[in-house]
Amino acid sequence: MSDIPVSNILFVSIALFFIGMYGLFTRRNLITMLMSIELILNSVNINFVVFNKYLYPEKLDGIFFTIFIIAIAAAEAAIAIAIIINLYRSHRSIDVEDASEMKY
Image 1 (tube, helix red, strand yellow):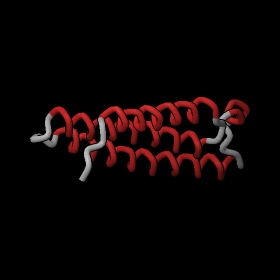
Image 2 (image 1 turned 180 degrees about the horizontal axis):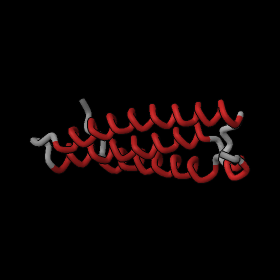
Image 3 (image 1 turned 90 degrees about the horizontal axis):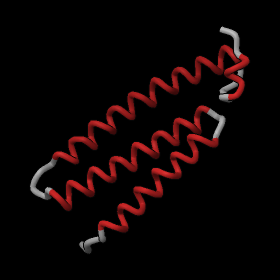
Protein backbone atom coordinates (compact mmCIF):
# COMPACT_ATOMS: atom_id res chain seq x y z
CA MET A 1 0.00 0.00 0.00
CA SER A 2 1.45 3.34 -1.02
CA ASP A 3 1.57 6.24 1.38
CA ILE A 4 -0.49 9.21 0.33
CA PRO A 5 0.97 12.55 1.48
CA VAL A 6 -0.86 14.28 4.30
CA SER A 7 -1.18 17.43 2.22
CA ASN A 8 -3.24 15.62 -0.43
CA ILE A 9 -5.64 14.17 2.12
CA LEU A 10 -5.98 17.51 3.89
CA PHE A 11 -6.66 19.18 0.55
CA VAL A 12 -9.57 16.78 -0.02
CA SER A 13 -10.82 17.45 3.50
CA ILE A 14 -10.62 21.23 3.02
CA ALA A 15 -12.38 20.94 -0.33
CA LEU A 16 -15.21 18.91 1.25
CA PHE A 17 -15.50 21.42 4.09
CA PHE A 18 -15.78 24.43 1.79
CA ILE A 19 -18.15 22.67 -0.60
CA GLY A 20 -20.33 21.96 2.44
CA MET A 21 -20.10 25.57 3.62
CA TYR A 22 -20.97 26.84 0.14
CA GLY A 23 -23.96 24.51 -0.04
CA LEU A 24 -25.10 25.48 3.43
CA PHE A 25 -25.01 29.22 2.74
CA THR A 26 -26.30 29.27 -0.84
CA ARG A 27 -29.05 26.65 -0.95
CA ARG A 28 -32.60 27.27 0.13
CA ASN A 29 -33.80 23.67 0.22
CA LEU A 30 -33.61 22.01 3.64
CA ILE A 31 -32.54 18.65 2.19
CA THR A 32 -29.53 20.13 0.40
CA MET A 33 -28.64 22.08 3.54
CA LEU A 34 -28.72 18.83 5.51
CA MET A 35 -26.46 17.16 2.93
CA SER A 36 -24.07 20.11 3.21
CA ILE A 37 -23.85 19.65 6.98
CA GLU A 38 -23.07 15.97 6.39
CA LEU A 39 -20.24 16.97 4.03
CA ILE A 40 -18.80 19.22 6.73
CA LEU A 41 -18.97 16.41 9.29
CA ASN A 42 -17.28 14.01 6.86
CA SER A 43 -14.42 16.45 6.31
CA VAL A 44 -13.92 16.60 10.07
CA ASN A 45 -13.89 12.79 10.16
CA ILE A 46 -11.17 12.73 7.50
CA ASN A 47 -9.11 15.15 9.59
CA PHE A 48 -9.47 13.01 12.71
CA VAL A 49 -8.35 9.87 10.90
CA VAL A 50 -5.44 11.53 9.11
CA PHE A 51 -4.06 13.28 12.17
CA ASN A 52 -4.47 10.12 14.23
CA LYS A 53 -2.60 8.06 11.63
CA TYR A 54 0.29 10.47 11.20
CA LEU A 55 0.68 11.87 14.73
CA TYR A 56 -0.24 8.92 16.93
CA PRO A 57 -0.26 5.73 14.83
CA GLU A 58 -0.26 3.49 17.92
CA LYS A 59 -3.41 5.05 19.40
CA LEU A 60 -6.99 4.90 18.14
CA ASP A 61 -8.35 8.16 19.56
CA GLY A 62 -9.08 9.69 16.15
CA ILE A 63 -10.89 6.55 15.03
CA PHE A 64 -13.07 6.58 18.15
CA PHE A 65 -13.95 10.24 17.60
CA THR A 66 -14.81 9.44 13.99
CA ILE A 67 -17.13 6.60 14.98
CA PHE A 68 -18.77 8.87 17.54
CA ILE A 69 -19.30 11.62 14.94
CA ILE A 70 -20.76 9.11 12.48
CA ALA A 71 -23.25 7.94 15.11
CA ILE A 72 -24.20 11.52 16.01
CA ALA A 73 -24.54 12.43 12.31
CA ALA A 74 -26.85 9.47 11.72
CA ALA A 75 -29.06 10.48 14.64
CA GLU A 76 -29.02 14.11 13.51
CA ALA A 77 -29.96 13.13 9.96
CA ALA A 78 -32.85 10.94 11.15
CA ILE A 79 -34.27 13.68 13.36
CA ALA A 80 -33.76 16.37 10.71
CA ILE A 81 -35.47 14.30 8.02
CA ALA A 82 -38.41 13.65 10.36
CA ILE A 83 -38.72 17.38 11.01
CA ILE A 84 -38.45 18.19 7.30
CA ILE A 85 -41.14 15.64 6.42
CA ASN A 86 -43.40 17.09 9.12
CA LEU A 87 -42.85 20.63 7.79
CA TYR A 88 -43.58 19.50 4.24
CA ARG A 89 -46.81 17.79 5.29
CA SER A 90 -48.06 20.84 7.13
CA HIS A 91 -46.83 23.63 4.82
CA ARG A 92 -46.27 21.91 1.43
CA SER A 93 -42.79 23.45 1.13
CA ILE A 94 -39.29 22.85 2.45
CA ASP A 95 -37.86 26.09 1.11
CA VAL A 96 -36.08 28.10 3.80
CA GLU A 97 -37.32 31.44 2.46
CA ASP A 98 -40.92 30.25 2.77
CA ALA A 99 -40.35 29.62 6.47
CA SER A 100 -40.67 33.32 7.30
CA GLU A 101 -44.15 33.33 5.76
CA MET A 102 -45.33 30.19 7.57
CA LYS A 103 -47.84 30.60 10.35
CA TYR A 104 -47.66 27.99 13.06
